[in-house]
Image 1 (cartoon, rainbow, N blue to C red):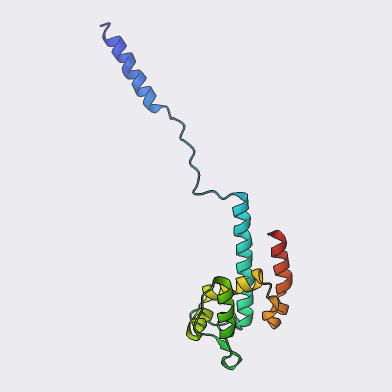
Image 2 (cartoon, helix red, strand yellow):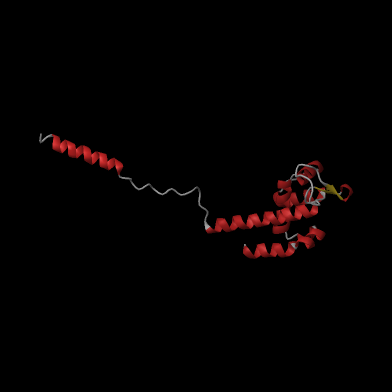
Length: 151
């Protein structure tokens, strides 16, 4: 009989140990940004908003990014209404590539690539007056100055 008491106590101990919840380790939700990374991300999003506003103004607020947008009797193309020679010149300055006229037109019609070019022109080269009417209409200079003051 004495052998069953320690066995019973052991079984009760094991049963109770299984019922006690162990603390679960804390798991961080995905990658965490540093303050500097979060600030850069927010500024980049603000730049993208300004560029979207400029593109909407320049293109008349219509047309999908995939549809060719042509203005000024064919002189200006894409949502940012670039002249092909402007695209060729600034792409050369930006990353050293030499584009053909066809490649320049294709780039101007591709919103993402044209946005990166406009971002370079405006925020790196200070070319806010290359879109005179819409720059005034959306207050481009003031928006750029505000963003640059936060960098």
